[in-house]
Amino acid sequence: MERRTTRQVSVGDICIGGGSHIAIQTMWDAPLPSNANDQEYQAVLTMLRKYRTMGCDIIRFSYPSKQDHTVFSRVCQDSPIPVVADIHFDWKLAMDALDCGAHKIRINPGNIGARWKVDEVVRSAKDHGAAIRIGLNGGSLPMELRMRAHAQGMVDTALTYIEWFEALDFHDIILSVKDSDTQTTYEAYRNLSGLTDYPLHLGVTEAGGVVSSVTRSTWALGRLLSEGIGDTIRISITDDREFEILAARELLRTIGLDASGIRIVSCPRCGRASFDSQGFLKKVQGRLMESTMPLTVAIMGCQVNGPGESSHADLAVTGIGNRVFIYEHGKLLKEVPVNEAEIALLDRLEVLSHAE
Ligand code: SF4
Image 1: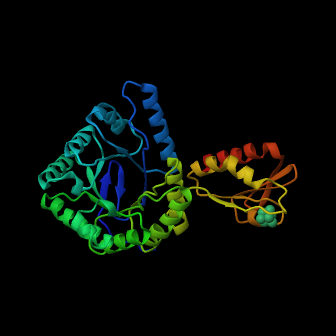
Image 2: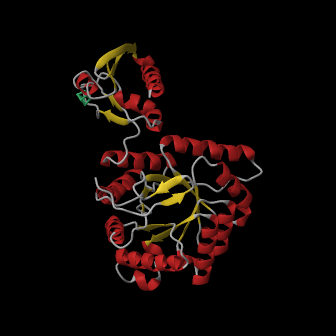
């Protein structure tokens, strides 16, 4: 697939655009920990390391108060992945987050206020070597533009802000034009991609829980990505953040833009099932999806399709009654009692990961 040619913008040690891999993002869903509470702080870092292992490239935090300055500075320094500060309304908070070491800030210049305040933020980002995402949402457009079609309103507004930034010779810009309506989102990104070469951060905003968000995001973002549009992606889900990372990775893999991670093949189960493939998948799914190994793992409920699927998979599991069969590249690797199947599969994955 031919991808749209975009400028490359650095966010910490991650490159966005210019043919780089499509970076996966998520957002921290809680207040920053109290700096005094080291256990809580370490728990944040542990979770960030897990996110990175799962394939997340960039993490965004809300930065609502200067009281968070010390702890946010520590996060920017210690995070295993680049950190973005999400700023609303207060330009001084944007300046403060940049002083903390944020690798990128996300602002909507329209809710920062007077242009001189936006200019101050842009100058500071330039001084700090940080990038800025101009993050527009259909619902936050200036009133006069809300009266027009949201998609074009967002595009026109983004182009205006680009002019403001370029007037200060600032080019480390990433753009987003999200809406909760999928067609509006699709049209806005599509139009914008033809008018600027700054990299685009794709997302559908306020997309709901797992089912609705994955469906809407696949429909809107999948189409854009398939047309070569998009340089970084967040799938916003009202649920655990792991789902956002996994959904983004699965979407990129399905479109052929990312080969990493385990592709799970599992049957829906029917009356012929003599092995609880559903229960087994639930037990191992988390571990499988954390892996970045480019493997196919099949989990099948019976011997009708089990051996057939196993021939296409790197590893396959199927069973009859209390006996479970594990195949590797179509060849029977071992037969184990059902209660040993989980450990047998995960052990084999461990071996394969070290063989890489
Ligand atoms: Fe049914 Fe077996 Fe097919 Fe699973 S693999 S859906 S259990 S026939």
